[in-house]
Image (cartoon, rainbow, N blue to C red; front, side):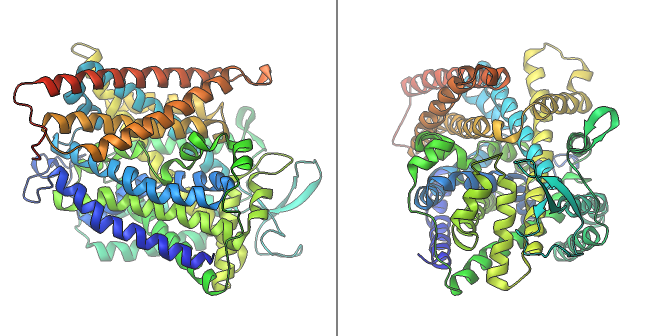
Length: 604
């Protein structure tokens, strides 16, 4: 099948879903454009800020579109082209986008409170505590996995042959780096370019925030400046390439990779601690233009490859091969693709920052349902780039090698390079570096938001667990630091490869729990709820099964020396917390159905 045709058909399906099913979900929920939102009624200039829909869409999309739809499909396409393709399309239309839309709507209707507060309103205090603890564990897993990916991207290096560069090239800085078999190889240090670009964009963020939110700069003017900043950051990165050897030792025996991880954690602390308009939102605004450009380049690149006659090289299904590496197709295909089809972390974003900036419920369908469809498109582009211009054999050699560790980051970035080369005749190294910048952009714009959400969740938790909590316990500095320390403890001891399956299962289980809370909310108001009940049941069964399998793998591995107590404990705690939430849900639903005046036929 032609890759361009496959992408066009996929886009048509997503557009039809937005205009048909998305509108139906909005009608069932009861969207009211004239109803004041928390952003307009509170408007404190700190967290509650009425925001132009285009700006908010960019911030929201940059926050939710992280490494999940890149790394997940990159790992999962080993099951074959067809299973990954179908799950992303069907999963996002009927589960993922519905989850995001419902989470945003409920958070707005509950006064801009987090989904955890919605859980308190529907499941009581016990349900609130269980939900917050589960969400906090997911925040730690997400941040640790994504920061590991960011470090991988910022310290990446490629064989010159992979980039179609000769041995005597002088475009990129190089170093001799050992291959898995121990022999040295000259590699291009592409990560140094991305590192400089990240620094430039971050430095520009406060200035952009001042222009947008203090000087009232128009969105189109801000977009022009943001594009200029993105272009300048890449140019400066190429002009001042820094030499990064991830294994080199610095400060007290730390490796360069560990030092970069520490610096990223420091950035996340300040991004979560400072007012949202100062760093987090303007950096997202600048970065999202790179993300939009990247998504457009990938999509049009795949279509151009289609015109060039590129067809799908992967088998329709290779379930045995996928199962040997990732686990059985059910449940592990679903949790491996993760955010590409459904993500519980999006509910935290919807109920943490987005709901506090939504100026009108009229904007909720585009931001809630539409942004998730756009994220799914990213995942689809990744699949088509791998099975088309990159080629399935090269994909296997890089991501699933017979010797040494695989590298999903390198696989994705090289797929971008091959796609832009085949479609537009750009040098492979340009597209590859662009892919690294994209991955870094998607990762950091999510992690800084997740750390901020962790701060909110911790403050909410203390207000319930501690009677009259002292001011220091509710202080943003305290809770931001606690979140950073927990993330650091996991990120410094486990690579993203180990964290990813647990993260994927926990992430989608949180989505199921959010839909469970939404079910109770809708039952109490006698509204339609099958569109959240069915996804909740499927995702609960899938993710709980995955966590049970992972618990056995971490606790009883074939090699006892590889027993992972940290992840084993995480698996067990996640299962226990989820069981508690589900028990409370069943009890609350049964109680609501028995209440006097309950009318299952009512729709509003």
